[in-house]
Image 1: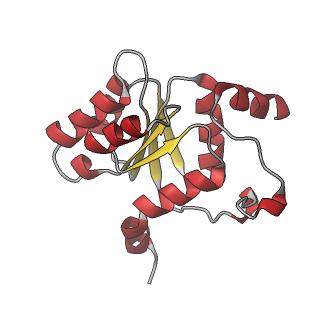
Image 2: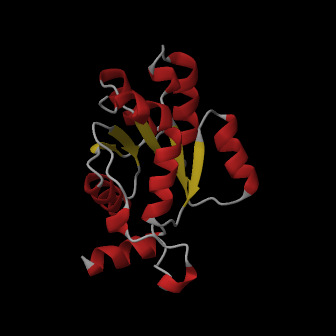
Length: 166
């Protein structure tokens, strides 16, 4: 597993953990699971695919994985998802173009599925572009799992409340 984490660090997916005394690190084991949540991940880097799938599955999330925006569109046509994690730069069709298609060409409720941009681009104009095309949140790579968890919790707040048993 250490080799995989090292590769994820090299590819820019995960940040190395800081010392615990900084106060902004939350141990992965303390992050609450998400039950009955399905996520479509559009990511072209195989190491990043593996790491994201592992993180999400550790949180009890059902995961479908594709490696470009065109495949994400096809998967969304065929299935329902609670959330899409969308890399912005992928071959064949990138995340911006795929998001535009989802927001314009799909009917509700798929048109409004929350989309979190996962991008190595941390420049303000690129983050603004992600929001402008219809992404709900931006999570720049590299990131810590707790940061992804917080973004998921934020965009799914209403859905999670509706799915809780009474």
